[in-house]
Image 1 (cartoon, one colour):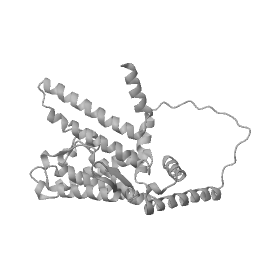
Image 2 (cartoon, rainbow, N blue to C red):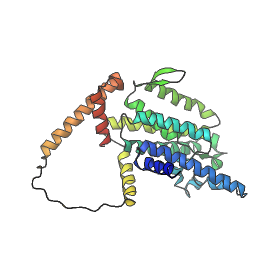
Image 3 (cartoon, rainbow, N blue to C red):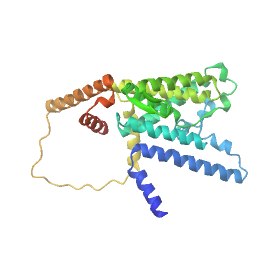
Image 4 (cartoon, rainbow, N blue to C red):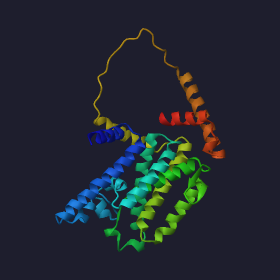
Length: 297
């Protein structure tokens, strides 16, 4: 048993950010479900406690629980819900990492969740249809974040082909379009709030990839905050000062700018090739170069 937990801890610590996101969602699901069982056995109403980590539609409640803007996107209460979302996160997260870095995955997961929460909140406080239920409506789940990941991949490489069970091969732009259309049509259903969140996440994913192609990475400020917060809890290693007899002369500004321009030009050519012919048209060296540059962001 100790070996199992040690292996689990090592995977969580040293695994990819995708693995850590999956573990975090599953761990929260298990902890929450166990807490609900314990509260039920002691005759405590668990519904009141749950509203503190779900995303409320009411401004008067959200004002006192701003953390719920983040906690809701890691929260699942039903086994099928968490299972389906984690399968989607794993599948499309792996695909996402073919075009983006691991830090960008975490950043977009959070931004997509925030976008979903804001559109959900705006819809429930704007449309008269929801006026009677706004004070009792709450949002939970990672679906908005996953939608952002799907749309980012579809925007970056619209002709990339995936294979779906019982459907066959389909290009990402069609898959993403169908997924968005289903959410639009389902707004009239029982899960209207969830569908608005899906659409908010999808919008964030599209805007993110669109701007990234033009040189603006919306996840950079958020990832800087995350890095600062994580570094607070890291033990700083001691610094050894060593002397070297020979040091490589630093590059001049002109040399640095020339190298950077060459890299950007090569990346642009690869992205143009993906746009024209899809990711599969890249050579192995082009795929490796794109991956290495994404890791360095």
